[in-house]
Image (cartoon, rainbow, N blue to C red; front, side, top):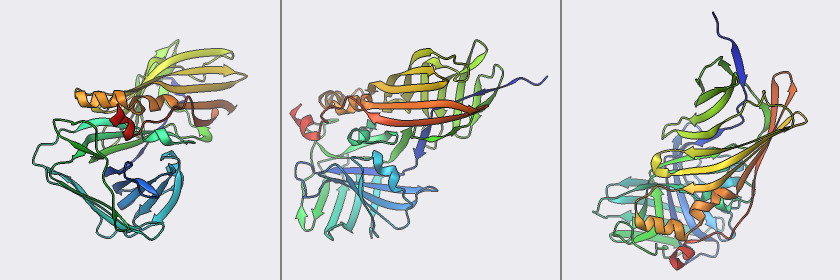
Length: 376
């Protein structure tokens, strides 16, 4: 006998933007007239193509993107980077290279900026000491003013460039700039505030949409379903399917959105219903987890969801120096708390549900820079 078919509305989404490697070089204490840092990135995938780009982090909080012609980039995706995109410039980046080997970072970039100034970024790390990398949720989303999604930049095998046995050059139009440094050693080694991940996982939570949400088909009492890159864990309550967990699979490590109390069936909600629950987002254990709460309300046949990562980020580290940095630089743990997602869902036709959703920043605080880390 064929099992009865049911349907469930899933309003949640985790997009993945493939990236092969990234490197961040800060010189905020010895700034240029325009830039305070550079961020080389390497791509090799079907979405972006194959090649290099360099993000120029500006004094005004915005970013300039210098990219090789082989890359296919969407300028609208950069509204979650700093205060948004100022300029996107195609550049050959001749001789661009960035690798991580047993001795550390080996990187070289040379290009002309928007003012035709020659820029050279060079790092040659020759440290014989074994690296002891860790995981991190990068606070990239802290500077975004009008984000279209919540960025989840999970950095695996993350580490800082070691000061000893390292040649570093930050040259802007013939002027050398000094790399920022961490205020205390990590693993008994003095570190530059230049850091890198040879295995980044770039995700965005619930990108803003204004479109139909397709129901997922499930069989009665079915506890797991797979849809594309997603795995769903279901829990049946009062003969209705509810969502216990959503896992977004990818080539690096799965990301899971887990609900402490299963997320209710939107179709089964009665008018004038208000429900509350909590959630966690986890990737690889080394990158910690994000926690928060949501409110679900149905009124006048419209379902409203508010989701806030109100518990912030909980790191997982046994290194005392890192715990000190995370405590002194509150940006690491607190920035997710300033994101709020709101969605409105309505059934306009029979079994045709439409959702309008978006993010806003709330309870903003003065961000902590690496200068504040040193003061701490």
